[in-house]
Every structure is written in C-alpha cells, then in structure tokens.
Length: 172
Ligand code: FES
Image 1 (cartoon, rainbow, N blue to C red):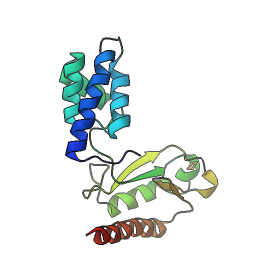
Image 2: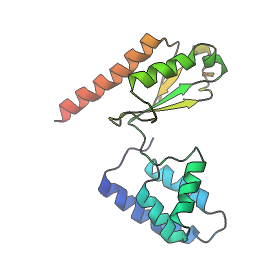
Image 3: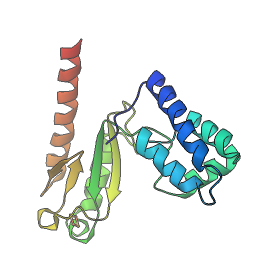
Image 4: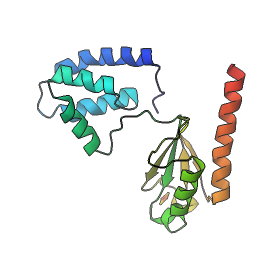
C-alpha cells in the first residue's frame, strides 16, 4: 500500500511524474495507463495530478475526470491508513458477510463514503480473499482475520484504533 504523502511530497511527486508523462502523452490510448501509473505512485489521483495530466496530454480535465469516475479502479481520495478488505465471495456471503458490512459501516460511521472521517480506515468489499475455509473473512492491510462474528469484528477495529492512538501518544 502506498503511504499517504504530505502536500509538499505530493507536489514533488506530481512534478516528477509530469516528465514521465510528457513522453507518453501522444500515444493513442495513453490516458488509462497514465492514470494507473499515477494511482500506483500516489495511491489515488488528486486534483493537482489531473491538472498536470491535462497540461501534458492536452486532454481536457473534464474528460479525464469522466474516465476516472467511470472506472471503479480509480479513486480521487487517499486511502485510509488501514485498508479493510471485506470478503463478500460465495463462502463468506453465505456466512453473513452482508451483516459484517453493516457492522463495519456502523463502527466506522461510513455513510456515503468508503473512508472514515479520521482517515484511518478505508472499506472495500472484495470477491474472494482465497481463504474460504475461514469464512467470513476480512483483511486489514496484510493481516487476515477469519471466522468473524460482529463482536469479533468490532473488537478488531477497536484494537487498530487503540494501537494508532498509543502510537500517536508515543510520538508526541
Ligand atoms: S469467499 Fe471469502 S475468502 Fe473466499
């Protein structure tokens, strides 16, 4: 996962990318690979990057924005520090994954957004995490948690929050 960058780091990364993009800008069908590269490097596609891509490719910003919103793979907001992948594949689905999605949305207070307001968690439902015997399953970054119940899920989220708080207190 790409760590979220500060404003200065972001500006620098976008400026470095503009040189790379300049060379690719004229190739037909270049926009999607450029957007993929941008997201890979920055973790998302910020407004400043859209402006830069538009400048380098001469593609209007509105068109770039249209492509970003059309394809689900692209996002315009940074990911939370903890990416929660909640499996809704068949094995997890029949083991109450839908209920877990409701629980986690409530726990993280997600309404029309996939990322908690403190920027800590991003929720993304996925099709199968490849460990169906543990259904229902979530992954938080690279850590897998299986045979979940609503209580277990709430506890995991609370533990991540607590760890984060302790870490912040230590660094203050
Ligand atoms: S269906 Fe959930 S891990 Fe496979």
